[in-house]
Amino acid sequence: MNHETPAKGDSRRSMLMAWLHSQAGAHGLLPETLRPASSDASFRRYFRLDTEPGGTFIAMDAPPDREDSRPFVKVARLFGAAGVTTPQIVAADLDRGFLLLGDLGQTTYLQALAAGADPQPLYLDALQSLVQIQCATRADALPCYDRDRLLAEMRLFPDWYIARHLRCQLDDREQIALERVFQTLIACALAQPALYVHRDFHSRNLMQLGRGNPGVLDFQDAVLGPAVYDLVSLLRDAYIEWPEEQQIGWAVRYWERARAAGLPVPTDFAHLWRDMDWIGLQRSLKVLGIFARLYHRDGKDGYLADLPRVMRHARRVVERYAGFGELLRLLDRLEQRAAAVGQTF
Image (tube, rainbow, N blue to C red; front, side, top):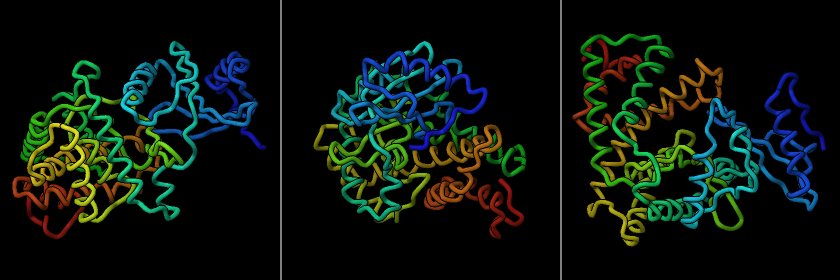
């Protein structure tokens, strides 16, 4: 098998290799088979390596000056205890930012769908896992998705998407109006019952498995937050787009299961759908800012192709509710739509 040679000067990889050699005897590792498995939008890197019995493990490299691996370990155990499939933590050196993990395979939901998989069983499995995660909620286990965090995320939209990516400036009235939208969305989020929130529960972080579907990844930023946050992450994914009637069908299935499990979701589905819309708008504004920052600050251009999809998610909400009229006019101006001619906030 042809395995990638470490890049010259990659001291982190050299350290990881040395650590894996120290673990080789206990776990049957073959460190020389180390090769890239995946990367994400953070500073973490993932590698796959073989074992003498013929299996594989995943090695995670999370530089401790950039990433704290302790939340990953904690949330893996919380979610795993809920009956959800998360990577087994085989060995860890948290001080140096190394983890040896069970391998949940190479097929994400997104890849499976692209290959023609039937989405219905995949998404019903994901909705069941979401209910299990939420049912395991303990009020003191995770940090809160509080006002400051929600606001900081949305301000990525004017700072990185509008100012840096589009090179547009907001006048004073537009800035005030956008801040008013932010406060409206924060109030909606804080009014919802607080449950465990993965924060990126979507097709790139869910793995198609033979058993225990789905495998859940990238959960280290989990918080206590709005009950519908992960639902909207799944159904209004930044990487795949579903017709609204399909979203409604899956949302109803979630709502029925959540109510049967005793979760504090609205008794009226229309109320849940409205919460989904508004939390989805908060998420869309955040993601537009994050994807722009990943490109301009971190040199990762792979997310640029997803910006139009995220903007469509946002526009569908602001077009639906009269209270977001000022934001709609701003989006029209930013996208140079004809309706924006001569209009300002």
